[in-house]
Amino acid sequence: MSVRQIDLFGGEPAEGPAPAVVSGMSVAAMSGEAALEPREPAASAAIDPLAPDLLIIDGTALLFRAFFGHPGRLAPDGVEVGATLGVCHQLLGLLRRQPAAHLAIAFDAGQVTFRNRIDPRYKANRGDPPPELVPQFELVQAAAAALGLPVFARLDFEADDLMATLARLAGQAGLRARLAAIDKDLCQVVRDDAPAVDLCDPKSDAVTDAAGVRERLGVRPEQVVDLMALTGDSTDNVAGVRGVGPKAAVALLDAFGDLDAIYHNLERVEFLGIRGAKALARKLEEGRDEAMLARALVRLDDAVALGVDAEELAARTRWAGPAADAEALFAGRLGSRGPLHGLQRLFDGRVAAAASA
Image (cartoon, rainbow, N blue to C red; front, side):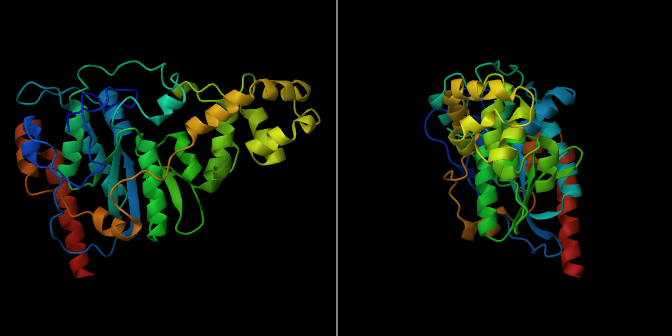
């Protein structure tokens, strides 16, 4: 798989088809000559004492956080790897604090997605990533796989779509899903019904359940898409309805339930007890097309073909510890064994705890 850029803010699509799922990858792949090679997880004792949850991590967001929040560091070959090592240290801390039995990490896989075909303006406000970061988009996936995390990346889709898909599969498999991410788009997949889905800030560990979504955005999780359809999302260059802010959007959804009901009842909007209600119906009518377009852009696709189904998910995502060839990658390619040894100690401790339980 040759990936020129994989970017939270954009990037070039890969040359040729890319695998939807990489359960691991050989260190030989990092030579630049070999393709990323899936590997089978190493055999290990079951980690029964852990919660039967699936922790789904937004790897691309971690990479950008690490790049802008950690000092740079050069690998032995002179390539910048500071963000990649920063992600590995973040993963170590996250896995220490979130003892889930099952793990997955999702990455963006290119600039152009199906959303750009819906609207070429989508994310057009974002610049190219810093050149020091570009080589690390592929490298961080290799590092995560070497640490034993099942890596998911799919051309034409964003990491959020993959996370929504994994959360849906987890529910079908009877696994509670925790999404390690702060993106408000993912609030739309939160659910309290068992097996539940919630969000967890990977830095503060603050958890957002359905009540938390209501507190944060003012609506229920199932109304998040329609809320963003009305207000738009300036971060992703999604317009929404001009002149409709969060307070008005929440009032509309409280009154009518969803976007379609709002547009079926425009004649009633002016009687709502909110400021500017008389002009609101006109704004909604004028912005009808933008609202429908925005809804298509912000709705996550939870049916991405990932090469794994609900029956296979638990086995495919059970953490089996770092790969046998991880030492070569961390010591040679990255020039640091620290996060690898930390993850290995964490895994060994879990196995020992399972054996003594």
